[in-house]
View 1 (cartoon, one colour):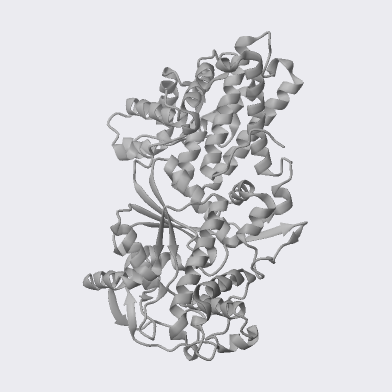
View 2 (cartoon, rainbow, N blue to C red):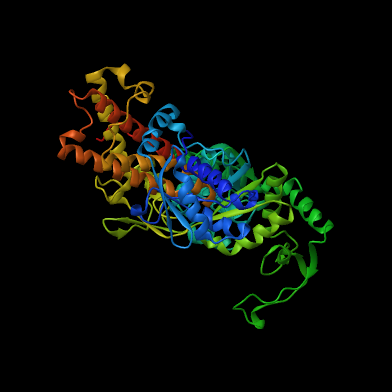
Length: 592
C-alpha cells in the first residue's frame, strides 16, 4: 500500500468511478478529491467524485453517488460508504488500513511524507533579501523562517528547490550606510565632530545611527588608517573615500546577516548582488528585450490615487506595458534623472532567474510590499515566467505582557539576535510558523519558553520526548534489537483497536496529504498546526494509559500488545521528526 493513504483511496475511488461512468475524460477524473470529512462523525474521508463526473456523464450526481456507495467497499481499503448532500460520498476505512500504515512509516523513517508531487520542477525561493545596512530585525526574522520552511516543504513535496538571497546593494540606502560607517571611522580615529554636526554634512542627513556600526568604524580605521581623511586631517572628499567605505560596509553587514541567519538555522544556496547585475548590463539587456517585443514605450501616467493635479508633475517617461499582463497601470522604468527605477532592476533580476531555468519563482516579501505584487508578476509573465508571492505581516514582540520595542544593539528596533538570545532558534522558528504568514502576530517571549499546552513549541517537543522516553524504557526491558524500526515494523498490530489508538493512527495517516496540501498552498504554518494536533492525540493516549492499565505502552505480561504500541509510539516520533525537519526545528530527546 502507498504510505499516502489519501492518495491510495483516491486511486480506488477513481477506479470505481470509471466502472460507474465508463469513458470519463482524464480532465474530469483529475478533479476528483478525497479529503477529510467536515465532521469526524461522517467517517474517515469524503469524495466529490460524483459531483465532478455528473456533467460529463449527463447524470444526476446523487445517482452516481449511489452507484459509488455500492462499488467502493469492494476493495481492501473502504469498509463502508454513504451518500451525503448533493452528491458527496463519505467513506469509512477498514481499521487494518490504518494499522497497515505503521510498517510503512517505520521503514520510511523521517522520509515519511516525501512526495513526488513536484515532479522535479525547479523552484527558486527568494527570501530575506534585506538591505545590507544593519542587523537582521524581527521583520526579517519572520520572512526568513517562512521562506526557509516553505523551501524545505517544497523539497519534501518533490520540487527541486534553490534558496536564494537578493542583496539590495545598488540603491541610495547603501550610500547612506557608507556615510554612517565613515562617521564611525572618524570617531575611531579620534576626529572631534558630533553626530549632529556630521549629519548636517550628509546628503539627506545621517540615517543609520546604531552602535552596531562602531566595530565597523574601528575596522575601517585599522584597515585604512588616516588615508581616507583630507590632507588637513579632516573629512575627506567623497570621491576619495565613498567607494572603499561602501564596499567595506556592505561586506561587513552581509557577513553579519549571514551569521545572524546561520544562528537561526537559515543557509541560502545562492546570493545575487543587485550592484553586479546593474554593472553587468543586465538591466539594459532586459529592457532591450521588452522593447523588442513592443512592451515598453514613452508615455505619461495619470496622477496616483489620492494625489491632486497640483501635487503631480506629468512627464514623458519610459513605461512597461504591465497592463498587458494583468496589472492595473503601466509602470515607470526610469527616474527623472535617467537612472533606472528599482522596478527595472527587479525586472532584470527576475528575468535572470527565468534564464537560469527556474520553472517557478516564489518571493517572500513583507506585507508593506503588497502593492508591488501585480507589477512584478506582470514582468515575470512578460518573460514567460511564473511568480508567486507570499506576504509576511508584522510581528509584535511582548515580554511581561508589554510590547518590547527597543534593542540594545540597534537602538531603534528588535534584532534577530535579541530574539535568539531570549528563547533560542527552535522556539523562534516554531513560533513564527504558528500563524499564517499574512496575519499579524504577537510573539510572546514568556509564552515561547513556558512549559504549558498553550506553548505549541513545548507541547510538540514534549510529545516527542515522551515517545523517546517510552522507547528508551523498552530498550532497557526488551533489548535494543527488539525495538529497532525494522523489528517493530514486523509487529502484529491487531490489538491497536482503542478509539484513542485509532485516532492517533488516523492523524499519522494524514501527514503525507498535509505535506502536499501545504506545499500547493505555499502555507508552511499548516505543518505547525498538524504537529500540534498530532501531539494532542499522543498526549491523550498517554493520559488514557495512566487511567486504564490495559492501554499502557509497556506491559510485561502482554508482549504482543506491547510491541504493537511501541510501533505506534515509534511511528509517532518519526512523524514528529519529519514535520520538525520541514520547520527547521531540532527534536528534543528529553525535556529539561
